[in-house]
Picture 1: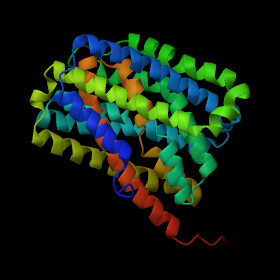
Picture 2 (picture 1 turned 120 degrees about the horizontal axis):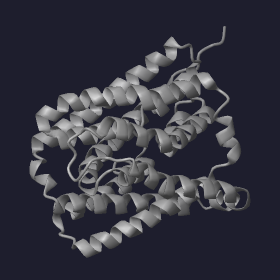
Picture 3 (picture 1 turned 180 degrees about the vertical axis):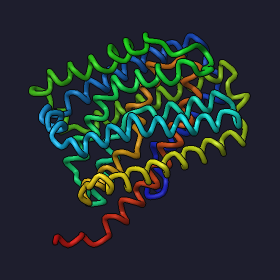
Length: 324
């Protein structure tokens, strides 16, 4: 069953179901919010402690690949997301459109994208550096993009404000920096016990999903979430991924990236992070809006895992090109 059904995806779906069906009192939701905030800070502390400083420094060496990844993640992706949200809004409502737009503003995923790059015989060191740089830059770029592109949107529960950046800095960036400071002493220990980081990572995601969905349920947001809206979300997420896969693959060829680096560009530049994205969204968006954003993000994340795993296997099975 684990070959076909990811237990973590099942856990996310259960958290979604509980948040929709089970009424959670305001006091309990408030407690869960505090616990989720602490878990997010702990998660980024572990990220900082796990990541060798040399990996961050090495991220800056291949400017063609790393620059292309940043442009794809924080320029092209948001532009495509903005266009799709403009089309989706009149069909299913502004809230869903805002959720799809928010997905396009997040940094790239790390673990799964690097694993797929390895399977596809891409540039793994470049993938590690690119995903790392994307998440570090995203701590500043994503809040700025959210404020610039979403502040004027008709979001339920209030607008996105500059205070969101302060929360991101305090809740995400400060723990990351503290983890980097501690990394020379605790880095090896954290890297040896990957299960701890994974448990905190997945537990944090489940907490955020539960609190976001239960908050949206309390606000009555699901009244507008029809079967048609779900179909539009799935179709839009698939289209968003397809466009970015085409842009990164043919764009990498156009700028002359070698095949291994082009594979890295394809996989890192077309994926979005659930682990980093949900904490960022929870820090930046009003509680009611967050509940609607969670659904497109979870849908896009699952589609990207399925599609990119198939692509990685096919690319990995192709014969390596013969050097001239």
